[in-house]
Length: 201
Image 1: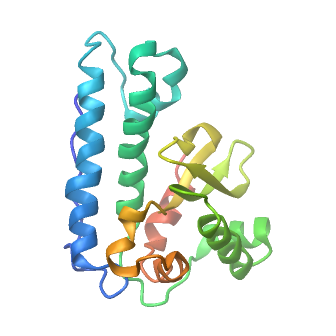
Image 2 (image 1 turned 120 degrees about the vertical axis):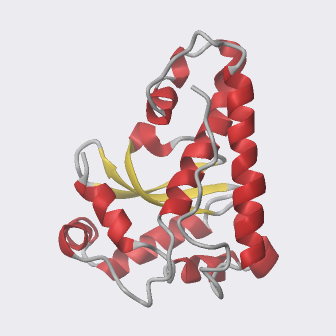
């Protein structure tokens, strides 16, 4: 399977002032495209490998040939993570999750505010580069996890929402103010999309 860069469903300046056009342009067309290119290059070494989806490929990393295992984890993980990240962004005008997702957040964290604090703390304290995720774990419980680099979170459960805390995601606008970037991230979450991920099997 040859992978390609998904198109965004919004313009590069649609998330301003919270995420600027230049960051979005570089993040999507350079960084995300780079992961796609390097994933395809790794898989070209073993044209006999066939997977129905990127999910299946990442879940099978430990069974891949040794010479491409690290490249697939890093670049397949980068492609997977960035696809989920970009899909779940849109200006939300201060809206919050609703329906079953909100009920699950309140059930598993106590309140939306407690979830937000846990998610923000996981993102702030991720040492170096990586991600913070809201996942539905294998027991069906919502959980916040932090992952280094581009390590695939899919092995721990179903990812619902992720924030990229690699410096390329925020440094042009926020420099070293990661906490400010994280706070503003909550103003551009597409909660309807996150809810649909929660509802899907």
